[in-house]
Length: 247
Image 1 (cartoon, rainbow, N blue to C red):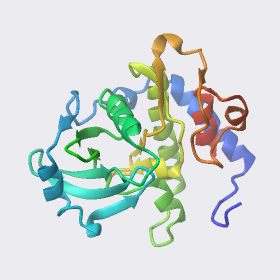
Image 2 (cartoon, rainbow, N blue to C red):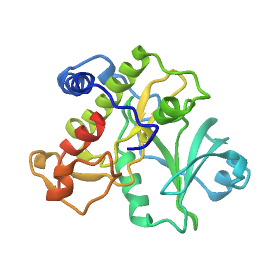
Image 3 (tube, rainbow, N blue to C red):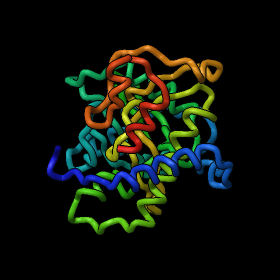
C-alpha cells in the first residue's frame, strides 16, 4: 500500500456506495441542468490556433502529464475562452484509436458533471481541446499539502456529483458508456469546485439496447482501482466503475 493512501472506515465506504445508488435513481434538478457549452459537435481548430494558445507548446503552459500526452492551459481567441489542450505523445502506447474514441464519445456528451470536449486538431498532430477546470484534479486536493484541505461537505458534494456523471454515462447517454478508469486524477474540479468526470481514453461504448449485456474486453485501467471480478472474467459492466468509485 502506498504511504499516501488513506484507509477509509468500511462504514464510510458503504455510505459512499449507497449515496451513488441513491443518486443514480433520483431525478434531481441538477441532473437536468444544461451545459453552458453549445449542444453541438465539437469544433475543428487549426494547428496555428493551438500553437498561439500554448505559445507553441511552451513547457511553462503544461498543467498535467498524462498517458495520452501533456495537457496545456491556453486561450483560444476564436471562442474567447480558456481551454485545456491535450497533445498526443508520439511515444505513448495510446494512439489514433484512443484519439478518435474520445472525440466520438465526448462530442455526443453535454452534461454538467462531465468535462466537455470543445474541439480537436488533426493537422499532422492529434490534439483534443477541453473546457478548462480551474481547480485541477481531486487527487491534487487530497494529497497536495500545499493546497487548503477540502471540507467534509465539499468532499461529499464531489462524490455525489461524480456519481451523477457516471450514472449519466450508463443510463442517459445515446450509448451506454463504461469509463474503465475512474480514479481521483480523472475527477476534475471547476472554479466552484463542481466535480466533473474526465479522461475517456479507455472508455467502452455499447448500444442502450444492450444495457444488461456484459462486454468482453482485454484488461485496461489502473491497478488498485480495478474490480477483481473484471480482472478474472474480462467481462465489462458498469460494476467496474462502481467498484473504482468506491475505492
